[in-house]
Image 1: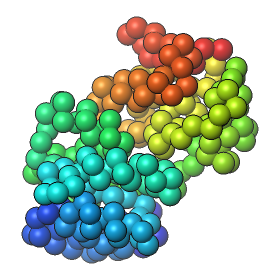
Image 2 (image 1 turned 90 degrees about the horizontal axis):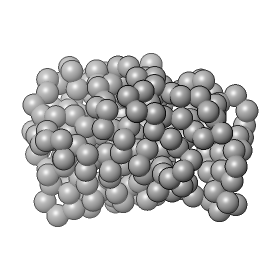
Image 3 (image 1 turned 180 degrees about the vertical axis):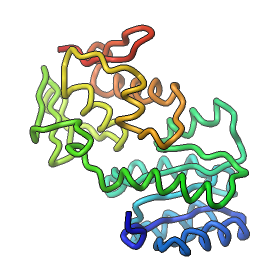
Length: 232
């Protein structure tokens, strides 16, 4: 990967952390902007469109969760990776992060080199579109009243367009690409999140639940102990 092709935004209220992370990322060749709180980050995003946003959770004023929620409501950032960097590692905190639309949850403390490696692993997926991940060959797939348009990055349910964050779109695209096929959880993790990123099993559950809320409970079936399939 060519680091110069990627823009990052680092958001943290601790100046020393911003400096350390920015220094190490710039040393690798990345284009880096920083913000010290959520409000500043949202303002910068009016003109700065990063490929990845690294967010601290505990910040004064608008915290990381609120900031992420606002970012995910902006269609310009549907394909932008959002990762939380936080000292809070509890399961419920991680689940809240994924609920807010995060792609990854990185726990402090972490060595700068490991953090850079983690972010590189996340960014490798920015350049891989759905067809490269073998999620879809045709430009559209329609099953029942659900239509997925891969070129337009849109989903229509009963002729009504719905907005899906990038991970939910990729997950739906994978499942609907082969209706009736059972996708094991391990395959879903590898295809959607990548084998280089540590993702807990609950991450899939959260995204499946959110998908069901938007397209209908009956369309995605759980195969106990195995994985999920899209009802053909």
